[in-house]
Amino acid sequence: MNENLELVQKLYKDAEMGVYTCERLLEDLKEKDNKIKQAIEDILKQYHEFKQQSEKILNEKQIEMPENGMLSKMGARMGIKKEVKQDNSDSAIAAMLIEGISMGSLDTKKNIDQYKDHMTKEEKKLLNHFLKFQEDSIEKLKKFL
Image: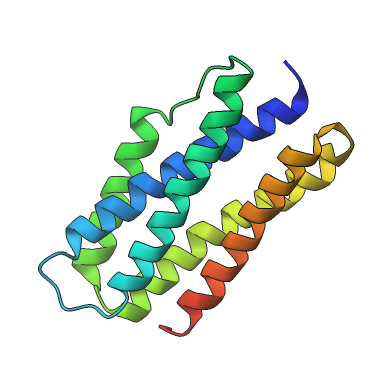
């Protein structure tokens, strides 16, 4: 398989995990009065869009969609529950999200730089758009700190 398709698989996997964690977080905040919920819903919507776009590319190339493992999801779920139980302030939620998105952003940058010569124009555009989304999400969340 081409390296660029591995990157699209990674984007799919990152977006799928983003959807999962945002949905779990919103579920845990459902009965709470947090102002950050709208920002999380906006981020969730964009993660859904990236998941669909990467899924479309992988389907066209007849490449399997990787799923995040049950252990990864359980770890994320337990971490979210613990954090929300300890401190469900908008500031604490924003810090948790910024930390996770920042890790993904650094990984996305590294992959774009490493494989830039192997990506198609469409894939490069998608990955750069995903990176911009990550950076914009971090900036949006900073106002809650």
